[in-house]
Length: 121
Image (cartoon, rainbow, N blue to C red):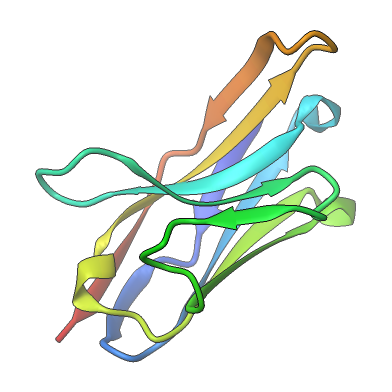
């Protein structure tokens, strides 16, 4: 599976951005997808995840109520709508896809190259 992110850029605090992650290859093996971010000097952290059906989502406390994760399975694309952006949201955002066997073994753990989001104050 190959993942390509897009949509990052520079935005003022309070503004919005929409990130996209296009998946290609053996997309049938994907069980869940997510967005992670890594700010300068910090560890990579989970932002949001969504199941393959799109029926279940989970968010980091820091983005709840401001970010929305979604999937368009017909287009093999995942999105992250980011509203009310804050300077502390500045980071490189990475797309991730995971897949598991019937007994829970991790079979797929793919990452995109990342897209930079910069929020100015």
